[in-house]
View 1 (cartoon, helix red, strand yellow):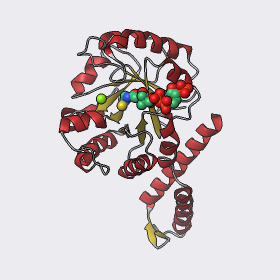
View 2 (cartoon, helix red, strand yellow):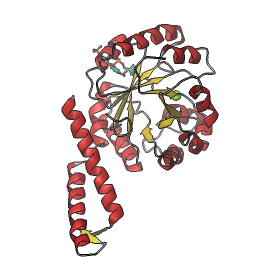
View 3 (cartoon, helix red, strand yellow):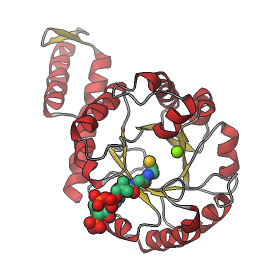
View 4 (cartoon, protein in one colour):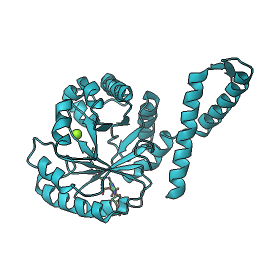
Length: 286
Ligand code: COA
Ligand code: MG
């Protein structure tokens, strides 16, 4: 599957030191996995987690799931060794934490070849410099680090995320301007289904491609929330049909359900159908 043409609805973090969770991941219905060496791994476990993860990824068995490895920052005692350990190991991207500028990407880019780089946007500096980070030729995606961001902003943890919407939107704007993927932050209360649903719906409404997750219980919700609904697919089909019918008569505007449909709406409708097909294809192969 083309890396740029795959769904990113559900992106699950797995702590690199948790062998059982790593094994389990081969059977989970996630679009992508972030194998974490950074904040989910204690200092005493850093080296063991790195070894375990490199071995696990070399063994493979993750199917269509995108494999991202979140390294420790290059300014930490582990970042360089993390990068070196995955040289030659089959992964889809290196996820760099706490990216503040394009120079932080350069530092990783010059130590790696070929592999795509993803940036955690989770500091005020990273949000402010999101445009140059997204525009870096090696960067393929953003992951919003909402826990770090809340800490740095000193903002309240509110259900509606009002205090950080500006930052999320700014980063999303940069990602869209550069044509890269953007995945929303995690929902910490992993047993709270209603809260997760509300936050997934909000992220989807903003335009994010998917949500990062911390527990398998969150997967089904994210997969559903970030996929086109049956109603959306149905509307997309009717919009395309109606537009093609008026186009055949030399006109440029159709009307569906009392709303105008122009060529730009048809482009969105085609994208909706393509995304629905991609998801159906992926789910058929699992
Ligand atoms: N990925 C894959 N499997 C996971 C998982 C994850 N993130 N979190 C839990 N599981 C597995 C467990 O291994 C367990 O499987 P088992 O019964 O076969 O052993 C099963 O799901 C149920 O787990 P549960 O007992 O409900 O949770 P827990 O108490 O073991 O773990 C957390 C809860 C929150 C500590 C754990 O989910 C976790 O570490 N999440 C990731 C945190 C993280 O990566 N943070 C950094 C980014 S914010
Ligand atoms: Mg973080």
